[in-house]
Length: 129
Image (cartoon, rainbow, N blue to C red; front, side, top):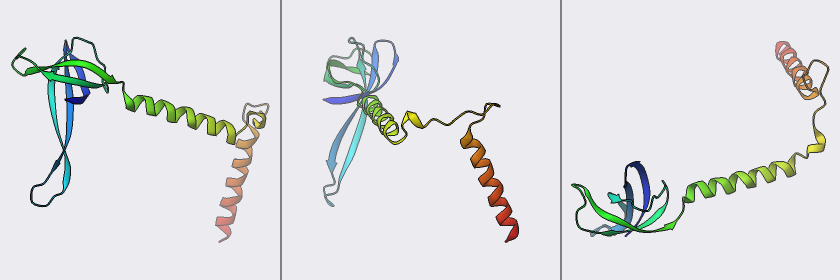
């Protein structure tokens, strides 16, 4: 069976979530069934890893499975890192570094001063209405 490691807080034990697709016998609707297994972790897997497990003789009261091999690494972290890199590239394209705001003598930027003026103008317009 193939599953995803959801917990590694125990010593030499990991909790693996195995999901399968089931179909209702009468209504033919498909849905996902999941079961969590306690697995003997001799490899040292991390949370989020995709692993293959097999049934073995009972190791303890609830632990009857063993990890055979790691199929894939944590896909969630990998995709998040890729998205962050892409976002940085897009931000760099949209806001070139040559257009940095000029600093005033008191440490505030020109952009901040302009926004303060805009706020004052808006409040004056609201008072007139």
